[in-house]
Length: 186
Image (cartoon, rainbow, N blue to C red):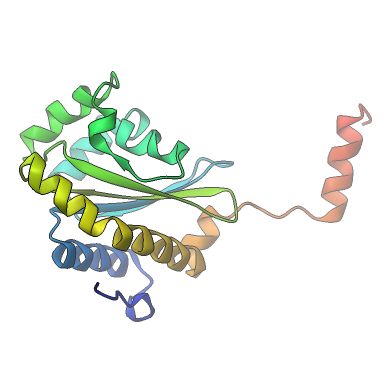
């Protein structure tokens, strides 16, 4: 088991992407993505090792709104192998485009539920036979879960990124005003 030291990671997009690259190299994976969503504000941040061409295409097609490898794992507490998502109506829609960028539909998503209501996710892929994938998945799942929690915590502790995902705190007066409004008062 390899130890990944997040204290030495620069708390910037480049630092987090570098961390994902190291994770891929150490665990023999092709690509890795981290994203976090504030479920209250719907703000999303993310970092990935995918090529810029795929990132631009993915965004221009607005796949972030339909990608089952993103949305379905965020509703889970356990890692989800993408084999389970193949029957979802949008799976083929996303991956017929991904194949054009030489991205395979074999992967794993590890969700993280944070203390501010935000949900994080690390997704990884590997182009290999199904048998090799099964062995690899079993060998790396524990390290991926640990890496996911650690990375999410580090992102949340970083000033700029963590602030973007935290729920705004209401003052006691704001809470009181909301309670009066709920009671029908003006």
